Image (cartoon, rainbow, N blue to C red; front, top):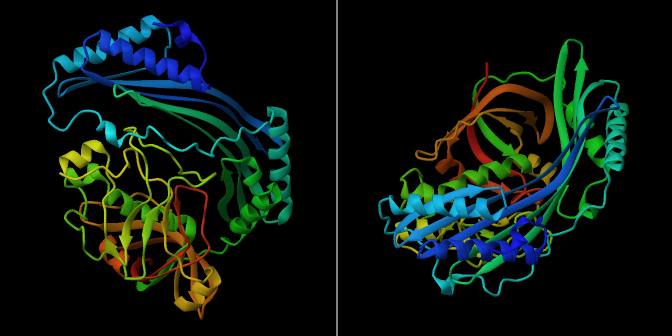
Length: 448
């Protein structure tokens, strides 16, 4: 085994040598095939509160996952120690597990023809040449702008700056090794507003793989202040059934439940309300949902999945009809289908949008609830039952009337998706799921 394994990572050649060494060790110990997943990251986070440094955290770590196969018997081990002896011990542990594990007819590497041998170069790596002292000053300035915005902003839970570089490598016995470096940077601010005895909390953040794409600190600060102040005077609603708009950042979660329901693991475990729904209408006919894995500087882009399979543009919903599930190699075999290159998740999910921004959606709704925050985890993917604590604003005549809190919204995901009225063009790009605000025909709102 070469000494390259003892050298720090964050370099393509070093990553490739490490993966090659581990695969060779697995073969030496008798494995019929093997795969290696390596993730190394380094970065820091600073937080400032009330003008003082609250925390400075550095991180630099790595995790290596080794999976070996003896025919259809599988064993796995993980480690973070790159010394040759540690690698040998981890591979040996994985081999020992595999030798005494029952056969699984669905286990094994992806077919060689499915692997991303000619994967495209990713445009996702933009290290931020920012020192910790510089980050502290940026955070202080962001918080100061926010605290000065309104006299009702009386406290802060902090402004923070974070930056991280991540190098991901995957390789297997078919001769495939893929390396994908990415960066992610973030600025956030969390505030507290007071009015009489009432206190409200809210926040704002910006995140991107390229620091040049981040919102300015004044934008983050002013948005955090505006969001916090506008929650003052919140009240409950009487129980009712009304139209509901999820703002874009919360609509992302609504689509996240759909993604979970079409994910292979939930399907073969019979824990999804979309089992046997291929070819059936799930959304209105105007809706298309697809993924775009090769977008430059997008937070969900990836050239290959966790099986080393080439990612590809997938259309999951067309004309409202479910066209495809989201599958990795193992779940595809369990379901007697083909992998869609989604081991580990989806890559930049988009839903078709209309031509209305949020104010125009409010006009379309007329009277109802605008949801700006969700709490709790009351979603049952097996049945589709949905119940979440919520806060937001009551809307009449297409205009926000007052903030609301301490309410619960409930429905069934099947009905919510089927009764989707419109998706706004106010797309939130701060995540792997990109959507605008979503207007639903009606939901139950439980209040006082």
